[in-house]
Length: 523
Image (tube, rainbow, N blue to C red; front, side):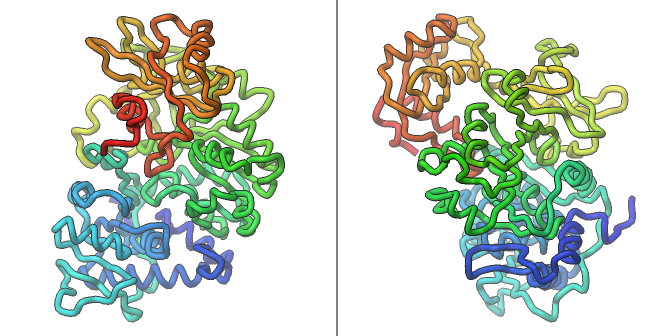
């Protein structure tokens, strides 16, 4: 077992920022709510000390159940400062699901804001909770339950040391429905990732990072520890900011943007995605869902001084595992179905493609990756069945994504589970999406399958102008085989988004089974 050392943990990146920018803002929650590196560091040490003292020793797992507020951000840092693994959870999820995750991660304590405290209480697990916004309740403040009031006298002198193979994060990939699937990531996983990032980008003290997703989304770690490792400031983006995103970017002096691609459509609908409107951005990153070439072109016209990258990676491979830098001359030629390529896998990793028979393919197939960013395995080993395999002494992860290899680049085709059989015809939903987007008047489109007799049929949801179904069908007949033609088209003002601000395909599939006009009814 490797001995714990003070600089082996991902939270050491915050200490680097602390040394470079002690009195500079590390977190800006609003014009009147800014926290310097020194203030955030002292807060995290105090909270970490309270947990360590009240739990009579170093905790193993600390959940953070809070919104994008001081409790959430300082809570993540405090959890890491104790030497424990941080387990960020979405404060808006039902108590039953939160309880499943707390049990699966074997959490010792929770850092929560008032909403999170209410949810933890509803789980009935009796876990000790540090809720900085609410004082302790005296008699209930025991080490095995109740509130833990943070005390200045409890503050740690410095963060606890950790070993590289200690777990730093536990992330859950199930979203807001389904059985939680816990993915532990070690400090070694994360430090390799950030070594790649540091070599690729030039972040510095003067940068401002837009933080768009919830704290439980793995890409939050990119925002926080890229910014904090460089001495830059993190700016959580509230929903109201999208009403005039260029104004928010200017006022906060944002230079680094990272979001899901759905944000591009959101800004476009406000009419603010105009040439030069985001000229203050130096870097623009997108991840979490397929990034369309047309969306990048629109974003680049607005962020005309920005380098744009499409990042790809499942949680199991630590945040992102590949990157493609947008080039107007090259990217479109490598795109499949109008989707920006995902690039080459990070240094130190191996990649291979498997065809439908599990045989290695040189040109296309399921992407499998092995290397230092690979999780040591799911919390529940049963979740790994069919996902991991060992060959020649290396552990490989099957991503479930189909890609095409061109030179040293990979282009995303689609999920294995997004390929459907329509009366014997194998249809790629991404291909239908791309064809429907090419229809005159259509801005974006998403195809989903619904049951029909003994088979399936397609329903296309689309944004943009209302176009007669006959016109859409006529256009698609020239692009798709007859068996892949959609059965129905439904116009929507915008696509629903899940808690991670990705297009919610599950919700669209649910709506597709409802009568037209009844999409908003139901659960």
